[in-house]
Image (tube, rainbow, N blue to C red; front, side, top):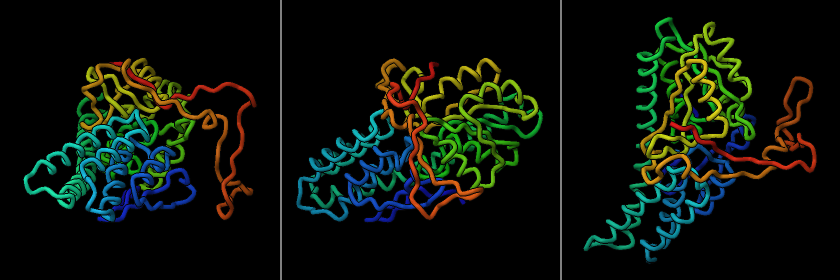
Length: 348
């Protein structure tokens, strides 16, 4: 059973606090759009599909418990505009907001519309997004696994190895995952030799989250630093039968340029040089036809402290001290400048 990052029943939403993984499993209760905004902005929830789902459902919970006498159409539009500001690079969030606004507008235009009927239309649409995301991810996994089996040289020689970057699993989506969903599908078909995951500095989504999912699912896996990827492809491509690099996406421009976690661009270059297939696994909602190319994608820059500090539990001998609060330590020279873009763009 895959990890569950989003727990929802009508009127209630709990989101796994991914900042505490892999050491503690803690769920935050999201009661309204403000809670959802802070969960997304603080990166307690992350991953383009999960961000959109949490935003949609956070508002659904708020509406469920709210006053039905308000101007529901205006209220929903205002709240959705606010939620989009939490992570502007992830197109799924903006696309979900636009789709939900359209649902509300259609409900409001009905001759029998009321605040209650508009609210119910929104809640049903948000819940359907949750169901659709899981189904889409499973479809992506199957399609990606079939593509690797039929289009890579490595697949002709037996079980294959796959390298992935950042976290694109059930922790980044409503369930199953996109790029990690491909790995799950290959593994489920008995065709996976090994999974390699990068640590994904500076936020370590690979070492904290992807590694956590792989261990949880008992998928054979090895963690590498981001800077080891090229050496892995050169030294172990044949011995490990590496077939592909599979990554997710936060935004795909109309021409196919792809924005994803910083470091993806380097992996694309390494893969091309070493003759390894490079796959982007993403749902249709990640494609932004209004953005012509990668040059038009706004790249979010994160606080410098994400690079200069690191947080985790103390190590006592060979054991982790999980009883006491995690500690934050400095790992950089004081006073040094920091440039910390969250994403980069791989050009088609």
